[in-house]
Image (cartoon, rainbow, N blue to C red; front, side, top):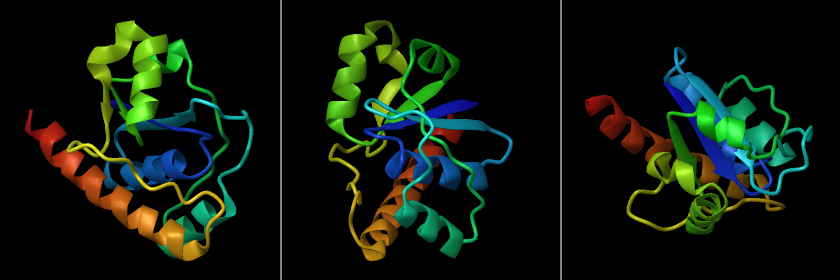
Length: 140
């Protein structure tokens, strides 16, 4: 499976989600990208801190969402409804593989610029919804 996580800048939520899924499914290929990413940026300090606390190895540099990345992915999981809408508008031919990570709707909280406690809360939210998504994805 090739999984792509998408957020805004590709320094907080999507790299954290990428690292979580890589730990859960080491045999899968997992990437992340941002709709407004500045390519080559490291993961945010808060993201790096929380992943290190959880014992999850990470080596991340940000990248922009591209047609090639969307084509590569079997599933594209977005952090917010607006991320999904933007992909659907700009890349309508990939709509069938783009979905929000939080299947019941609602956005994954953005910890950008917040204290480490906010990043820990986002980690827990991502871990929970990735586990839920995996249950459904591996049942198919």
